[in-house]
Amino acid sequence: MVRAPCCEKMGLKKGPWTLEEDQILISFIQKYGHENWRALPKQAGLLRCGKSCRLRWINYLRPDIKRGNFSEEEEQIIIKLHQLLGNRWSAIASRLPGRTDNEIKNFWHTHLKKRLEQHNIDLASATTTKQSHEMTTNVTQNIDHHIISPNYYQDSQNMVTYHPTYCHDHQENNSSSHDHTQSNKEEIIQYSTNYGHEDMTSFNNDMVFWYNVFMSSGNNTFEIS
DNA sequence: AACAGGCGCAACCGCCTGCTG
DNA sequence: CCAGCAGGCGGTTGCGCCTGT
Image (cartoon, rainbow, N blue to C red; front, side, top):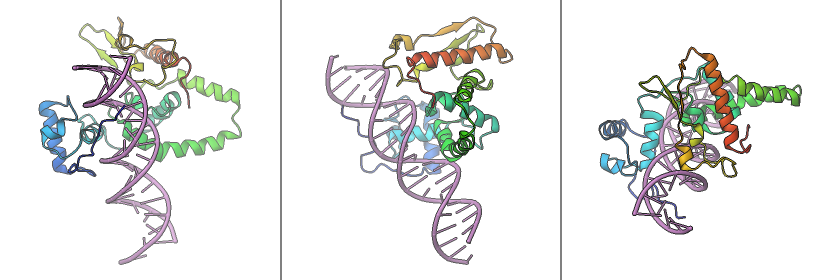
């Protein structure tokens, strides 16, 4: 398949964004939204490619972006989710409100990776296979309660609508016994429940459910790295 | 004060997948 | 079913800043 050209046209600007460009992009999106990223720069009068605009908006200009250092709690969440999900930064980011995949990826490569590697070296001689297994098990059972899924939407009837996460995890289902067709992807599981943030049992069950979804969605090809 | 090396982060690149005609 | 397009994603790069010498 021929890949669509991107940013190849002469005259398109690259490199750091200026304040002026940021303001143009923000005001355009606030006015008209971003239904078509490719067309957006032209419509907004920006000499950027659509991808660049999208990246800038998602990673920097979005109003709900949380700036600043990662908290200890967030670090732990990232570590745990990375054990569970691998390098699926967008999936990890979707569980950390206000954080972007790029930010998490950078944070991982600059901080956590080194720290964990050092930690692994320290543990290498002492860790047995059994302990390793127990660690993995604990990860699945003790995912931090504060991880918030953006896939939950509470509607007016106090129902929680759940969109299965595998909608976004598209690689691991090739040989799956589950046929994740479009109809399956659109499947919505509704819990008629009193589910609340105080109800940690429900939250725990939820995380176990998620884990099961992850595991089953890949016909065990899902890798914990 | 000047320089070198390391670090952090924004941005780019290229591939993959889903959608549509 | 196929081809082309658009969006999304993860890997990588480049550059500015910081720190040590």
